[in-house]
Image (cartoon, rainbow, N blue to C red; front, side):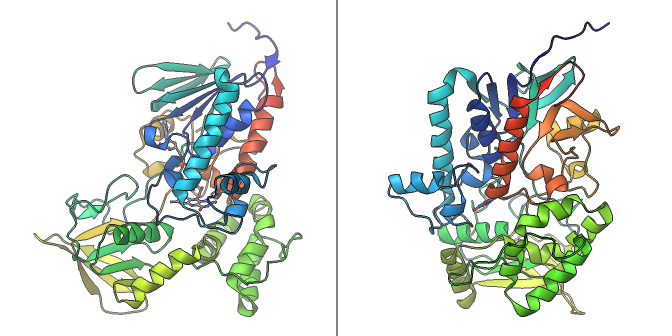
Length: 460
Ligand SMILES: Cc1cc2nc3c(=O)[nH]c(=O)nc-3n(C[C@H](O)[C@H](O)[C@H](O)COP(=O)(O)OP(=O)(O)OC[C@H]3O[C@@H](n4cnc5c(N)ncnc54)[C@H](O)[C@@H]3O)c2cc1C
């Protein structure tokens, strides 16, 4: 029998799984409140404080947002700009390197440690499992240790890309097919003049192309995706979009039509930027069918206009195309075979009848991060899914959560003590991938965690 638990402040001890942008910023936001202890757990020590995006050391990898919009704090919009200016590293309008942004995040975390060090513990380890019962959470670590906390927050970032359908289930040699470019030095052992096939034409593809180029690769690169759309560049001189504050269309389906009509008369980038303030609200009020329709019809256009390239990056990509070293193609992979010196990849051009074969010395999967829990091999995700403590959201974009961020279990019940933030919550918020959106989510959650009071059995 359970004895009634005493009434006390919630979240005195918060364990955060993952120290990328989301987890690190949640830790800092929490530490700024009194009486909170934070355990920040990261499995890859090179990513501690910076995560996947900002631990890149490539100087060709630039932020795709101007510095002026990249403050880590929603209530201190000049924080990053001031940090840059104080070090002579840039100004408001600059597109600085992701490595510089990683340094900013790590220094901001180090400042928090200097100020509140007693209440922050950094743990180099991987969380393998967690158990949410009797008013607390126990997190089991790979090294056999156990961490106990009042709340656990999953800030685990995106899941690795899925294999394209034509490849799934086949066994391709590891030096010919790179399944996850974030997990591998994909240029290692590659003949500098050999042909490369990149599957995907979005931001991951651009990153990979820039890194190949920076490492002296001179061979032909084909970048292939269904539509062949590549991210657009930021353009100086476009009028600032007037934010649309009232709904321009009654629901998400109509918004798709509205956006397409608007794009006939003005730049797509302006259309997408103008509806940013209301996208989360319209997504929240749409049912699963309307959300699915939005994803089907607008997402490919949305992604390439919403997540754009710094002008320097776009210039480099254009130069590679002009030099005939890089080709963007629209089509679908039909078949892949293995030969001793290459993998011939047969693909069907969009709208074409006859397949084309590209013989690639290496094929790199740049289809981008994923969120489908059911296809994940991540040990923690599999464990939590297997024991019914999490479930995918309806569109399989990530974790199912309630409006306060608690994960929903397999029977549809919200966990009292386990929450989630960051891109894996995009099923709930949609726009929660870039820094300006995540920082809002994180500061709201930190306030809720600290301010809520509870008695046993009641969540925040
Ligand atoms: C290449 C790239 C470039 C981007 N550029 C920009 C940009 O210029 N501007 C912008 O606004 N946004 C950008 N974004 C988007 C945005 O900044 C990221 O989505 C954001 O950084 C996500 O951070 P995160 O902490 O949620 O995830 P991640 O950075 O993926 O961090 C998650 C961390 O959790 C750890 N982890 C996972 N599971 C466990 C476990 N079981 N135990 C312990 N640790 C675990 C991982 O090792 C990882 O370090 C970019 C994203 C990418 C991928």
